[in-house]
Length: 398
Image (cartoon, rainbow, N blue to C red):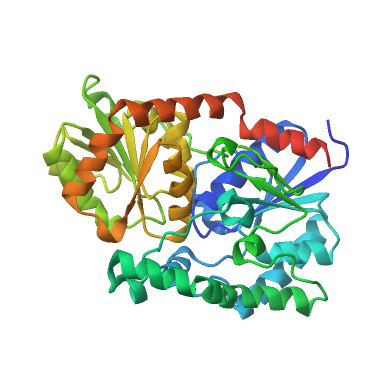
């Protein structure tokens, strides 16, 4: 058991995923005997969890403002905000005095950790790194949407590097302001920078080539609220094929009516849905909705999962051996689905071009043997290598 070692987890929870992953790892660290601190926004008080460590309130970008920046293609971290977060991070480090920091999407903490000479591990996804050599499918941006998919992709390819350089500029300036050399040339590598990079991903989805020395795969870090099933759970037809639909905190909720209409009129699937409870009354016996669900249970009950394509729900589906249709709108979701689709366990559908006939064709594809077998194979790998065990082994090296 560690003696005198103190872990600080930082969840910059602009989406639920960036709180959920630290909650899961924090619980594992507490059980392994570490004095464990978790800093996040006050959102943690609204999320069911069983983290037994010490919590700290952290100022973060509120989720709606972050979503607007993402949707418009604006820089995610303006200079004034980064400096404010950096100052708060320094104060937190001086208060907690951790042995090691693990940050989830808090770029300013990578700078503060270097200033205080404390090891920093960046909990992130491998697809953002240059090592992964990802394909950048055009995200949903107002400035490009008017041109259609083909020309929009061409314009995005031409503009991506200079625009990413603009996005990286405030963080580079923060490093230089405090006498540090920015650690990486690309935006993705800058956002994932640290003494260590801990990938919340399945290595089988990525190129078979040596990892950088600072990087390691933990495996998918999974979380689901510990909730009882909703009252309608026993009403589900145990013999009917089922879709679990969860567009998440960063998905296009305005696409949900079209998705549910297509599923209930064009297939024989019953639908378990994260959404307003009133949805259940629209198609009784076909739609079963609740504002929050234990996603692992819902995915286990389903035959396939429709989500926003982001890694949390996509991996939740794969852990249960279920193929994924990712209705993706932002770049993070596109990147995740690019690697998942290459394994045959899912399909990426751009949300802006979502049409019922194509959507139904993709649903039928996912119900065939190929995607189901691919998802089952990946489920075995996830079960064989729990991320929490890999994380505790990593901590033991510190």
